[in-house]
Length: 445
Image (cartoon, rainbow, N blue to C red; front, side, top):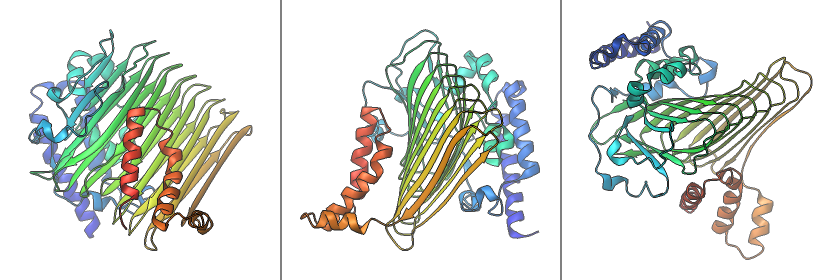
């Protein structure tokens, strides 16, 4: 048995032991339908193992580097609750509803839901399963199927808590729901597996932001799965800000299904963490849907961020647009793999995709792989990718007008990132992003 096979076997055996401990902690809940799905997920891992760099989908991101630590399942031994004072600089929007999770577990005493609308729910997945079990079971695993890979299966096997948001038909939720995911790496090496589910009813509207932070310096892994259901004529603005510590790893799988005339927008900003893998998959299950993916990754040192997207056009008259931008310094590595799939019946599809990256050092690398698979003949689709350095002509123009080199550099990078930052319509979050962007750009290389 080679080294990789042995490591895969060792990991599977450890997960089986962890699962047995997790199962014993469920106190009689192991007989429900959800636990049957958990068991199927564990069986999938046991049979198929974890991907390696030989797998095309993981060609530029070595899963072994994510899984090499001896993680302890946070569900088996939850981390200590952090002092609220440690989070005061993070939770700064008094008008928003806030959901706080530490190592994947909901912390009600740090959370605050403002909206009191009937049938609206924003809170713990675990709590909701006890009170709204029917709706949870109806949606659980419908989009993020275990066959999507070992990381989805691992999350499914250990599903216990996460954020559940249910927006009733016709509701217009004015307050942003802000989800704070804290990896507590102060006293252990933890793996957390949050399971999120967002269900937006027909003609409903909501704005959700997720922010990721780390306490402590030990290695950690957040393996998150989010299933999003957008009913007819619904609107969801969804933001993710990844600002974890230098030893924190993150694997996120987000699966979206849009019904007719729905609108979904996602903006993912990555400037913290060690190894980050974001999988975004949107299925257009009704005509006249509109979907936007925006991404910005600012990386330095040896950070690595890998963004995989899939826009699955299954119905006619749908529109999708993707714009991902990267700024890489030192020995950082960025990956963008964007796939547009236009099925045979998806006539009148408009689909666009672009990945642009600026390298600030000779050792920084960006791998871009745009893909078009078109099986319909009446479509408008395009993709493009550029990777290079700052424009010498633009630098010369600014310098010739008395602007020093560092300020000119900052101005150009700020303008480059602005297209993605401007996609954030939440004023409070956009201001935070603009401030953080300037802090990063003003650092000396």
